[in-house]
Length: 116
Image 1 (cartoon, rainbow, N blue to C red):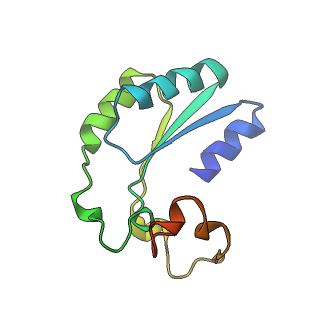
Image 2: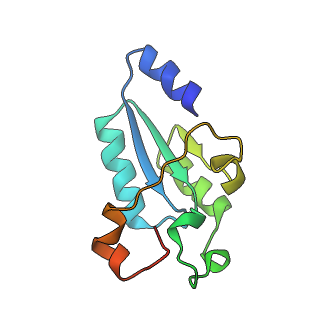
């Protein structure tokens, strides 16, 4: 995905990203339409991020329908759907790891310990 986006940018094209956790609905498609109006290339990410779920929240039960999402993206004129799996996003040999312990104490972090 990074190589594709860099190639587009190198061609002087603007790139719009609509990040989602999949199971697309009209709100997502509205964002795709806005991105399409503002950018020459549109990418939709479909990634159910396990780190966005707290310890007692059920990541495995989060609704997914990738085939339907792909159909909706195709019909909406999305140029690329980026749908990585969790191991590829959180590889053990990653070169960068961030630890944050201030901002996560506020907002919903205060009521969701262990979530962030």
